[in-house]
Amino acid sequence: MKYLDKIKTASLKQDALILAIESSCDETAASVVKGGREILSSVIMSSMTEHIPFGGVVPEIASRMHTTAISLTVEKAVSDAGITLGDLDAIAVTYGSGLIGALLVGVSYAKALAYSLGIPLVPVNHVRGHVSAGYLTDKELTPPFICLLASGGHTAIIDVKDYYTYDVLGGTLDDAAGEAFDKVARVLGLQYPGVPNVERLAKGGENNIELPAMLKGKKGYDFSYSGLKTAVINYVHSKEQKGEEYSKEDLACSFQSSALDILVKKALIAVKERGYKTLSVGGGVSANGYLREKLQKECGKKGVKLVLPERKLCTDNASMIGAEGFLQYLNKNYADLTLNANAFIEITATK
Ligand code: KG4
Ligand code: ZN
Image 1 (cartoon, helix red, strand yellow):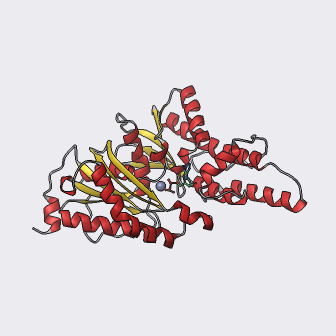
Image 2 (spheres, protein in one colour):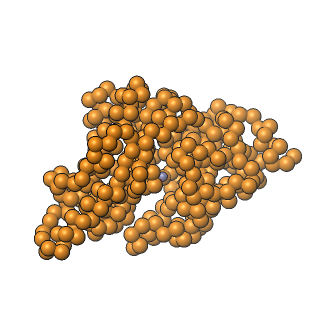
Image 3 (cartoon, rainbow, N blue to C red):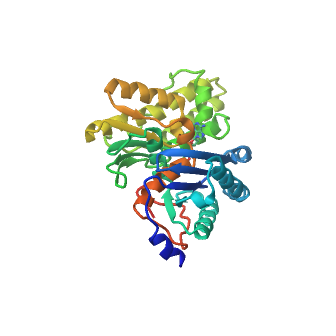
């Protein structure tokens, strides 16, 4: 029987074992997830240290590292889960958004494996994966809820109406939150990744430097990080030109508050406006300790239930791709072998 005929007739299982593969940026990751909610294994190989000397992820280096790491990563994820390839019900893979060469490694590998095993290949949108990390964190989490998404590539407030329907209430008009941290880190003389490194520096400082308010006077759920980022860069350059001393710690602390307080504020307005009870959070920026504390405090005050994934589920991982892949599998959103990687897809895209 041909591959496509075979997968069309495959029966759906509520406790399906899904092998998920993620290679959109600098992490080569694989995970086995059961029934979309239970992580049986999670392997993450990062090429981060290779990129540090360049101040950011170098696409060609990331792609090469993926080709070296992918077989071992998948093999380890399957063996750590205590299963064999023959036990798998489907393979989920990130097909976008991300670095094209990096994505292609995961997509090609997943295609070949799904074809050889005769099981469905499920294409997964990376950002939807970040949202679905909430389902692994709180097994009772069911839509509707608001998701605050903040990563290196995206900043958005999403009304998750049901498992498949997203209403994107707003997003960044320019830089993403993580991107702004990564750029500010560089000007402060810190290495990539910017979010944890700025956080570390900010711990020794105070929020006492006035930075421009974001989209002042504008309501709604949009964000703009480029003005804030430029204000920090100008502050540093002007101090340096005048030969004046300044506290990098205070600047990091002031930037961190300006960049993150607004995320919490807008996300909670969305929860209230939609009449929901739950706020879920996702993306690498939500691994930031200041943001996590602020979210806990403000949600506590307002009686909003907070679903905050543990740090390793906030940054890129394959388990979140398995959680989202399970939902797409239940919807029979299967790809055929023409599936291609796509560097830019909408937050709502499913194929
Ligand atoms: O979600 P993510 O890992 O990848 C994207 O989908 O973009 O987010 C990347 C962002 C970067 O801005 C980086 O500075 C930040 O997440 N990041 C972290 C950590 N590692 C990377 N933030 C906090 N703690 C980390 N360990
Ligand atoms: Zn990500």
